[in-house]
Length: 218
Image 1 (cartoon, rainbow, N blue to C red):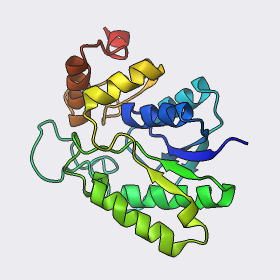
Image 2 (image 1 turned 90 degrees about the vertical axis):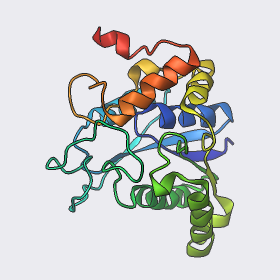
Image 3 (image 1 turned 90 degrees about the horizontal axis):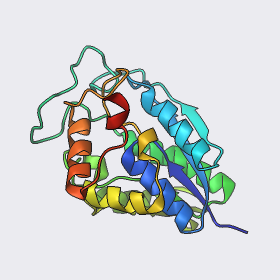
Image 4 (image 1 turned 135 degrees about the vertical axis):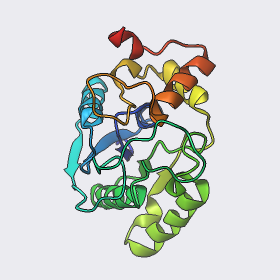
């Protein structure tokens, strides 16, 4: 019997690569997609498409957050165009904690032995829930707050990778990057100026590869 893993899948480069890494490691994967009221739902459709391409049934969990305060869910706050130090307005309060908690419940109920998340520190160092010490702390919560949590491992295979390294890994694994979506804005095509678009473009450039998604809109 294959070992099982819940994979947090947003439809972006990092989570899609994490999914394919989990598959490569021999896990029977269960992609978990969140609709948390984000301004653009293109990433949700991308996540669904990537799951289908990988031949995996996904679970879509709708948990619209009733509060505001993040430019990803509050249309009254502009998506930032310039990269600044500190925590950006695109930070969604406790998002990874919320998602990991649902993933943990899912994993424990299905007797999965792993939870894969594509978080990494290079691009999003301003996000406090994307750092190695955060995941170490969540491991303690998992072990103390669940019946079988000690049997479930939180796997962060990309945590110390650069975006270029992640893209190279995904290229080798056959990740369909043309199906992924990174842009923070909800347009029909990537805006090319938000943080996420910037880091995506830089990652492909540093990896010496062309972004297949970009060519769809040229």
